[in-house]
Image 1 (cartoon, rainbow, N blue to C red):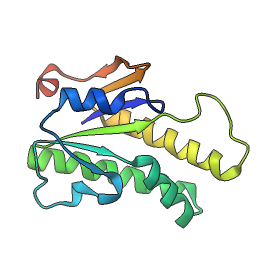
Image 2 (spheres, rainbow, N blue to C red):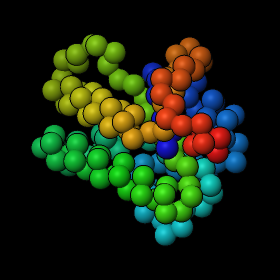
Image 3 (cartoon, helix red, strand yellow):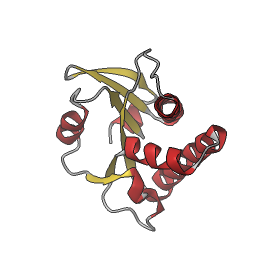
Image 4 (tube, rainbow, N blue to C red):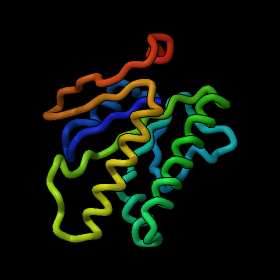
Amino acid sequence: MQLFIGGAHAGKRDLVASRFPEAVWSTAEEEPWREERPAGRTRVITGWHHWLETALAAESDDDRLRARLGERLEALCQAEAAHDVEWVLILSEMGRGIVPLEPRDRRLRDLAGWLAQDAAARADEVWYLRHGLASCLKRRSAARSAR
C-alpha cells in the first residue's frame, strides 16, 4: 500500500495519475476492497474526507470510529495480499496545528489525523506533497516499490 498525503490542491491526484496511469480509481465510500476480485492491479482510493464526514454524522463515539477506520485499513491489507493488488490512498492533510472552533470540525480533524497515522503505519511507502513537490517519508522495501 502507498499513501499520498498533503493539503488541498497540493498536487496529489496529478502525481498519482502520472505514476499509475493504468490505475483504477474509486472512493472510500465505494469500498473497493470488498470486491471479490478487485479490478486492476493498482487501485487508487480517494474521498476519505467525505467518508469521514458521513461517519462522524452517524457515530458519536470517536473510539468506535477509529476502530472502523482500522478495520477498513486491515481489509485493504488483506485484499492486497490475497489479490496481488496495490492500493494507493490519497488523503488530505487537515489542520497543520490549527484547532478549529467548532467541535464537529475538531472531531473531523482528529479523525483525519488518526486515519493518516494508521494508514502510514501500514503503508509500504508514504509520500507527502506540498506545492506539487513530493517527499518520500517512508519506504519499507525495494521489492514492493518496484510494482
